[in-house]
Length: 579
Image 1 (spheres, rainbow, N blue to C red):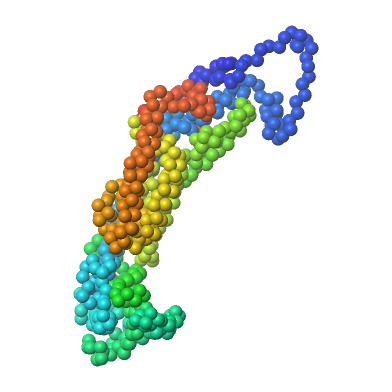
Image 2 (tube, rainbow, N blue to C red):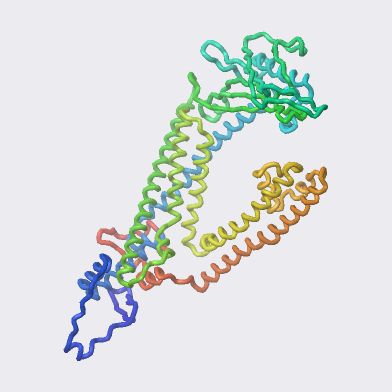
C-alpha cells in the first residue's frame, strides 16, 4: 500500500500496491498502448487519468474525505470545524415549546366542544325518549304496539313543548319567517301477507316510504291511540322502520369563560324505531348529527376579541418557525443527496467500484424527513386553527389530528440529538437494527392472527358479544395477547350450543397459548438479541462499511482548522460547547 502525507493532518492511503519502476529494457524500448473508451463514462475516466497527476488525485481524495467527515459531524463538531451555528437545533428546541403550547390551548378548546356535543346528545335522549335511562342504548326497546305509538306521541309532544321543558338554550330552526317542522316517516314493504301459523307468506320486497310533517305551532296533546291527532297507522307485519327527524339550534356559551368567541350549533336529530328483524323487539335509538358554524350577529363586551387576536399572532409565529425549520431541513436533505451523487461518481472513478445501497442510504437523513413532515402538518394545522378562531371553519377533528400528529413527530425528532451521545443512542440503534426483522416477523404473525380473527367471527359471533364483527374480534384478541379481560371472555360465552361452546374453549386456549407463550416470547427474544448485539458493537466497535473506512482514513480533528472555507469567520467559544 502506498502512503502519502498530504498537509499536516490527513494521512492518505491509496488502495492497491505501489507500481514498481519499469525495467531498463522497457524504458529503452517503450511500447505504445492504445486505449479505447467505449462509453461516455469511460471516456471521462480516460480524460481524467490523462490530465490528473498523482498529487492532484491524492488532493482530491483528501478533499472528499474531509467533505464527507464534515457532513456526518454533529452540530457542535460542525461549529468547531467551520464555526457554523447550530440553527436547526435551536429552532427545533424553540419549535417544541411553541407547538406544545399551541396544542395545549387548542386541546382545551376542543375539549369544550366535544363535551358540549356529548352533553347535548344525552339531554336530547332524556327529552325525547320516554323512560330513557343512562347507559341503556343497547337495551332500549319496546315490545307492544301501544308502546310504539306512545313513544312516537311522546317525542312529538316534547318537540312541540320544547320551550317549556328544556333547560338549555335550544330553539327551533328558522327558515325565513317559519320554523322547521318535525318529519315522521315510515318505511315498509309494498305488499305483504304473512301467516306464520300456516308457514306461508306473500311479500313484495320493494320498500315504500310515507311521510308527514308536524309544525312547531300546531296544537297537540297526548291522548290514547284513538284520540291522538297524528293520524298515523302502522302495519307491523310490513313495517321496517319509523323515523322522526327534526332540527334544533344552540349556542355554546361556556367558551366565553375561556376568552373565546362562542360557536353556533345545528343539531339534526333522528329517532329511529327499528323493526327490520320482525322479532317482536323494536329497538329505539337517537342519532345526533352536529354541525358548527359562525354566529351571524354577536356582541361580547370585554377583552375577548383582543385575546383572539393574540392567539392568532402566536399561531402565525408558529407557522413562521415551522417554515424556517422546513426550509433548513429540506436544504440539508438536498445537500445530502448531492453529496451522495458526488461520492458515487468519485468512488466509481477512482476505485472502479459501485457504492452499496446501504452506504448510499447513509446520506438520506430519516430524521430530517420526519421533521419536514412534522413541519408541513404544523403549518396546515395552524392555518386551520386560525380559521377556526376566526369562525370561518369548524373542522375541529381534522385540526386536532394534524396538530396532534405534528407534535408527536416534533418530540420524536428530539431523539436525533440525543443520539449523538453513546448512552442515549442505544435505543435508537436497537430500533433501527431490529426494524427489518420485526417487520418480517409481524408479517408472518399477522397471517396467524387474521386466521383466528375470521374463524372467531364466523363461529363465535352469534354466541358472543366480543365476536360480533371483525373489528371487535381483532380488539378482543389483541386484548387477550396482553392478558386483559381473559376471564370475562371465557365466561360470557353462551351455552346454547354445546358444540360451539366446546369449540370456543379449544379456540381460546390455543390462541392464548400460541401467541402469549410462543409468538410474543419470540418477538421479545428478537428485540433482546438485537439489543445485545448493539451493546457488543458499542464495546468492540461497529462493522466498518466502505464509506466509513474511507472516511476514517482522515484523522483531522474538528478544531484543527482544516475544514474551514475561505469565507468562514473565527469561532466564538460562547456559541457552542465542545464535546
